[in-house]
Structures are given as structure tokens and as C-alpha cells.
Image 1 (cartoon, rainbow, N blue to C red):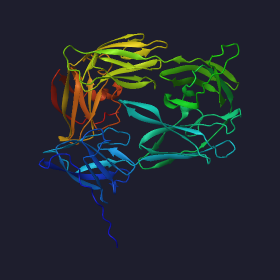
Image 2 (image 1 turned 180 degrees about the vertical axis):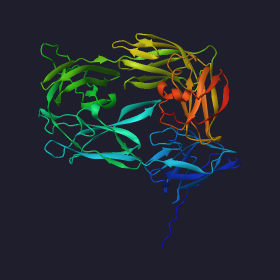
Image 3 (image 1 turned 90 degrees about the horizontal axis):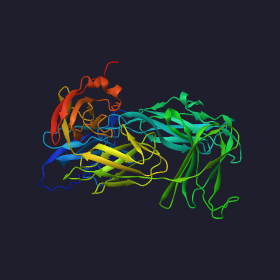
Image 4 (image 1 turned 180 degrees about the horizontal axis):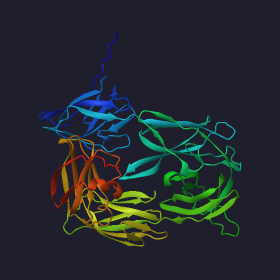
Length: 533
């Protein structure tokens, strides 16, 4: 019998040999099987930028154990297989927030348990109305998850079926609700007959779609049968400049208010003189073939050089050929200035926008004089936020060329928007521990909810904030606008904490605290039980 030897890599330490070292050890646990993950890869990093070189790494043995000696400090721990690594601290596969491993004297780091959630998969086959495999069918996977304290639906991935009509989505977070939407296209590009969209479990109405729940490490089967529908060709006439790179898309309202794709095509833009038009006029016709009946949004989005172009129009398709004129327009931008307090240390400050309903999103740094710019923003409604190491929050905002009301910025067509944002550094913090029977507990949520007197204008203070506790059960809220708050702990890391009606039962038992400017308070709070329904 040949013995198998597993070598555990020694920690690579960037400190001096004289530094005090502390034991850091534990087990990588396969949550799906409740057994040690054999030959798991374990990495420790000094910062959240885990793409850098780890300060310690190892491959576990058959017992899933790892062991290091590390200097005091805060570490990011990642572990998993050769292909998939996850963050330490997660209590469910949908939660990607990491908990730091706090190493030092009086820290219990000798028996860490790393919960590894093996990926799930959804697969199936799509057949046409004759019972034959349907190739090149677009399958859209929509995931329900809690993001920013609200449960939302968003497209997670697209796949096209192979020549056997098969599709597969792998490496999925388990214990999560997924929806499937299938859009069939005729195999003959010249055909007018097409297939109607269908949703799991093979229903034609997105309102009647039901989710698939697949556990970590398991696979779920979802087959579909397509139904014929009368198709119509949609001819799009546009004037995108020569050399424009981008797409023409035809979308509709799908499952759970998500945007479903019916068809998309690359923009074709070249010189083609139109009848009775100047010789240098730019016109182009593109045809979207065999579109099934329905209400759609037809849109163009592309760029030529440094200019971004955009156009959008609602259309109805009812089985008859349709011609649509879609003149494009340059996309305007958002620029502005952050006004800092006199003699304040600026540090790094950023401005972020996030479109409501899936519009543009992005973050830019404010210059030393406070100037910032988003060069191309499609019209819509946006939330604006202030971030960065300086810890500022907005106390005032004016919008020229657009409108700002109740924390929402509205950007219209055809004009640049200029923002003037006044910020304050009258912030403080609160730190401490979440406990269960007086023992600190890691990987749970500390939630800080404003009572409404903290003075911000961009909505940062109107919603609750969350901190996932570190390995020692600690939390540390920083750069919080001075004011009164309610603080509580929960082990429900899928709690929709941004919905007032959801956290109201918790707030009735939360701890009232006051955060003062330029100071931090120390609190110890218990886990609250789930409210009784």
C-alpha cells in the first residue's frame, strides 16, 4: 500500500522574524455534505484586495485542516477548490460579504470553521413544436438575491442551446431562487414563423413563472417545449454615424420586472445615400427577423470615437411587418463639484450614481478641487452617493439641467446635468460586539438604522447600514453622520434591512444610541430572535 503524503505549504510572512506569532488553524467544511473539504486551498491576505500575493497559503489534508502561525492583524481568508474560492464568514451561498479573521492576543483563532458552499447547477433541453431539439435558443437565468438590503431580481447569465438543444448553467450559488426565460428563434433566417417566449415551468406568461430552488452542490433539471407564434420582421432605420460600435436590442418586461432580451444585433453603420438625401447622409436599415407578438422597447446604444449615441422607443408587434425610424442622439453627461468644508482634510472622495431599474451606474473620483464628471449617462432616474476614505456625507445638493428630489436625480434627454454637492465631515462611529449568550459571534449582521435626524440629503442616512461581524464578533461602523440611531444584531444575513416594514419588528427591541461628531462609542449588543409572525 502506497501512502499518500499531502504537503501543507508554510505561511509566507512579510514581517520580521522577531514579531509575535499567534496560532491560526481550523477546518474547511463542505456545507452540502457536512464533512471536511479534502485538499482545499486556503489563502490569507493582508487586505481586501485578495488578488495580490497571499501572506500565507496551504492545501489541507483529508481532514480538511489548516494551520498557520501569523502576526497580529486583520486578514482576509479565502478557501475552496482549484477553480472556486469563497470568502470566510458567509452563512449562506448567496452572501459574498467577507468577515475578516482578527489575529492577536486573546483572539480565538485556533478552531476556525470555514464554510465552503459547493456550486449548484441548472441544466435542461429545449425542444421545438415537432419534438426535435431546438438549437441556438437563448436561455436567460434570473437570480433573486438581497442586495443593498432589498430583494431584487436581476439577470445572472445567458446561454444558448447547442445542436442537441441542451443548455447548462454551472457554478451557481445555491439555496437561491432562480427564474428561467427561453426565447426561441427560427432556424431559417428568412422564416416568418417563430416561437413564443416561455418561462419555467414551461408557461407562456411571465407572471405565472415559478422559481427553481437548487441547493448548494446539487443540480436541477428544467426542460422546455417551444410553441409556434406568428412572427413579423421589424425594420429599423437609424442614422448611427459611420463606424459606430454597439447593439440594437429588442427587450420586454419579463419575470419579476426584469428586462428580458428578445433579440439583439450589432449595429451596422456605413455611408449609404438615401433617396432625395445629400450624398454624405448616413442612413441604414437593419432587420430583426420573426419577432413574436408583444410590447417591446427598441433601443440603440453604441459609440463612435469618444461620443456615445443612444435611442429608445416603445413598439408593439402584432404579426404584421413593422418599420421604425430610430434617430440616434449623443448621450450627455453629468459633471459637478463637491464643496468641502473650509480647512478640511479632503482625503479620497468619490461620487457614485446608480440607475433605478437597471440604468447606468458608475463611480468616479473627485479631484482636489472637488470636480468630477460622468461623460456619458443615458436619461433616467439615479441615486447619488458619496464615498471614499475621507468619510464625508452630503448635506446639500443642487442640480442644473436636471432635477433632484427626495434623494433621486432625474436626468432628461438632450442636456448635460451639473451638480453642486455640499459635504460635511461631522461624522462619528460606533464599534463593539454582537453576542449570543454573552459570547461574541462571527459572521452575523449588526444593523444600524437612522431615526431620521442625521441631516443627509442623498439618502445615505434614510436607509439602514449593515456590518457583518469579524471572526471575533466585532463590528465597526465609521463615517456615520452625527445623530440618533437604533442598533441591533441578527443572524439573518438575508434580511431586507432597507425595507422599513421588514425591520420594524426588530427596531422595537433595538438599542438606541447617539453618534457624536469626531467620536466613536463602544457597544455590546445581543442577537435578536426572529420576530414572531
